[in-house]
Length: 149
Figure 1 (cartoon, rainbow, N blue to C red):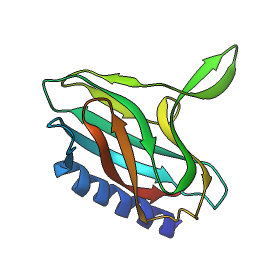
Figure 2 (figure 1 turned 180 degrees about the vertical axis):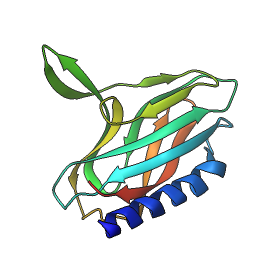
Figure 3 (figure 1 turned 120 degrees about the vertical axis):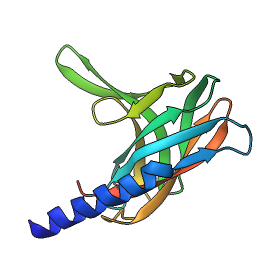
Figure 4 (figure 1 turned 30 degrees about the vertical axis):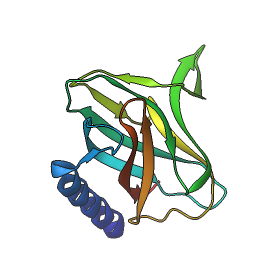
């Protein structure tokens, strides 16, 4: 229990430190984004994992998240969780609008990044990079900490 608490505290401190000043700019565009709460769930090779992050469009220009990429898995997609007739399902989405000044939360039970057929184990506490693909800003790499399941 102490180990889990220690890992969670470390994760919280690192997220706060990284999120406080973390922003990214794509070479393809001048559209800045802020990223907080970036994390991916621990999983073993061949399994599926989810990645989550809050994205703030700090610009005066709307953009659209149109995909994700990672060398961690065979397939990386932006998904949405939906509930129909009391059945929860996930499906890939073509894109998510991100108006100027808006905040987009990729989180459990909503929009998120799916990493399918992992090429390696994702271990608690390690840092990984997932590239978010935007319609205007282009490819933006985001560092994420692996979190316990």
